[in-house]
Image 1 (cartoon, rainbow, N blue to C red):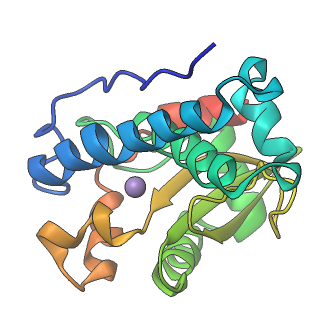
Image 2: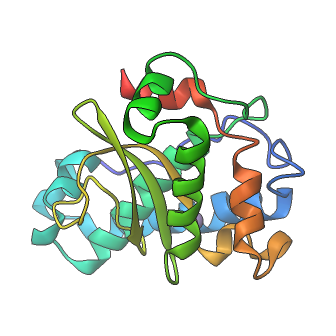
Length: 198
Ligand code: MN3
């Protein structure tokens, strides 16, 4: 069964001014659609066709570079779109806030460490908040890798991811990745992130 490009639950301009409509349109309809199509092509007529995306990623060291790059791209972007909302921003509550305070001491420290992970990932990649059985940690990965992959340095279940590929911000922010990272905090859907933890 082929993977399908997930629906975007808001308009391309819904996250403005933080993420501009043109970037959203190209990112979703070209990049994410491309990863989805290329993943399907990479697994077509193979034994991988009937596996879940989680199953593919969890055993990714056994598969081709095409499955790794496009399977990661398919999963990561789905999660990324769902992690944002026009009504997002503010601060997390409930279990997630408890977990953040437990791991990092405060929301402010967590934000600083996440920003640093996103800003210092060299080249293209992602910053993550990762659930390791109730304890949450921050990590980053290159390319379209993610913490579900068996070859990830920091493994666990990603509950928040930030795309720091240039295609995610260059039209609006050019070389100013830190400004894009700062803008992201205004659109994070904390209820969704909290729901992934519990
Ligand atoms: Mn991207």
